[in-house]
Structures are given as structure tokens and as C-alpha cells.
Length: 160
Image (cartoon, rainbow, N blue to C red):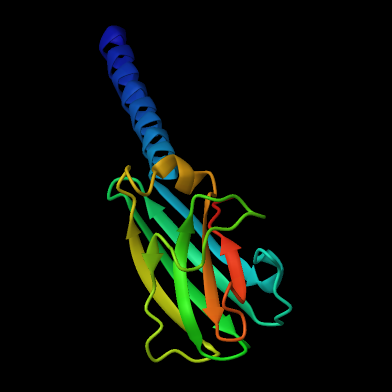
């Protein structure tokens, strides 16, 4: 009888340990599958060369490894005028810039004003846009205006 009770107790204990272990694995998998950063600051100080603009903005970014999709929401206020260009650029670390006319992805500026927001997605295809570069912060988003054709505000897409 003792042996049966001990066996039953052992089975229950092993079942509980397996449950805790699988929860831990699920949590770990979720950590490495979804990357998220909210409130990345956009400013003229991050543009190369820097802009004297007082405009500010924020970017919220989400990257899902399974779908290879980078989603973003850009909010801005106080631009010198309506955006004439907006895009996702890379690869370039903070402090470096690429030509403002050659973004990896052009973001539509139709109907936008000096204050606004825009959302979109970018496919991380592994050829043009590489996952390692996305996760290393080598892409940035910039907004250009007539007064600042090289860029009025900018921010690096970082997940740290």
C-alpha cells in the first residue's frame, strides 16, 4: 500500500514539475519571438547632419520573428510644415545617414500635416532587410519637410 501511495505521489510531483518546466519554456520562447519597444524619441538632434528643428516624435515598433514582420507607429508634432518624405532607412547606425531619397520603404505622406501619425509594416525578407540588422538597431525612420529636405526628425529602430 505504501508503494502505491509513493508511486502516486511521485507521478503527481513529476506532472507538476513538467508543467512548470513547460511554462518556463513557453515564456522563454515568447521572449525571443516578439520584440517590442514603445516611445522611441524622434528629434532633429538625431538627423545627420543635425537639424535645428524643435519638432519631436515617437516611434512604437514591434517585430515578430515567426512572420518576419516589423510593425511601426510614428507620431510627430511641431514639424516646420507637412512632411514631403518619410521612410525606413538602413543599414546605418546612429550618427550615420543614407541618402534621404533612397529609403528601404517609402511611407506615404499624402494628407499629412505638421502634427500627425502613420503606421505601417515592413517585411524582413532576409535579403534586402535582414533580421540581424533589425535586432541590432541598424535601421532608422526619418521625416523630411520642405524646410529640412535631408530630414527634420529621425530615430533609430532599437529594441533595448
